[in-house]
Length: 331
Image 1 (cartoon, rainbow, N blue to C red):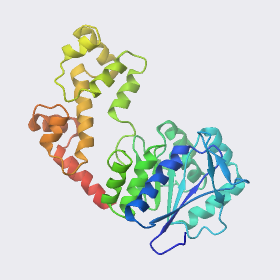
Image 2 (cartoon, rainbow, N blue to C red):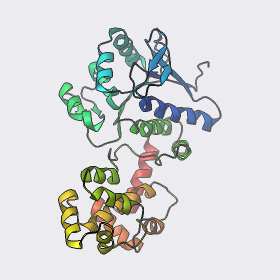
Image 3 (cartoon, one colour):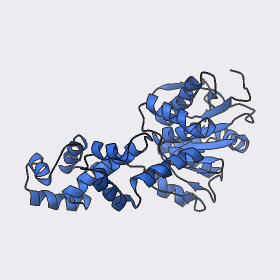
């Protein structure tokens, strides 16, 4: 495809063992943007120094790539995906790959990383004095290796100048949606998210963990992991602590003690946490009323919902949504 004034070249720099979703997730977002527009907004390219042109991904699938281009000056968005530690370390020690990557980062209009792809940018000195992030499991290592970087934890993605970094795997989709919102429009990003059955466009400041995942992780091998899943399926149903205890085949007193030990929440607070987290997702839909959000999350009325939301997040539901819409408009 020929390069035009309106077409932005998106170049994925891939290597052996690359995390498949780090590549395919953002790539699908850019491809959807082309389909939405009906003309090529993005010229998507996959490059590597694989001798046969095929890179084996983390899932075992081969990715057909072009050779590392000698001229990297026409790259608009460079995407550096992550991988497991052994694959990243091998690529970091590949002088040919890293030499090309250095030149590409110097020439690209926008440099991005997904997950542990941030370690490549760190080795090139691009993270110094920048606010960046990576996968939660690698945050400490990134900070130790690059003490001058401002590594942010528990965040989906960060934009610092022309440098974008994302937390890991599926947060690469969130970052790509934000890039499309910046390049095209928030409306297009929202449409793509719906097509992909993804979360409606999430701003980068959201946690790397959803409340259900976080709570189930805390429950781990405890029998309470099933309680979280059960409550998630009945957030709109009138549910009391007695109902929870009956489901768990235990007493209210025992359930209360277990919830406090595992979650540092009472059973009632656990249910409220799940309902409030669900409401944050619904608030991202601009046409949904506060009353309907309250109803769809199991609150008795809009007033009680607003009070609970304000206590938990320090802002009213309306202010939260206004802030989110403002973030959409600013990208």
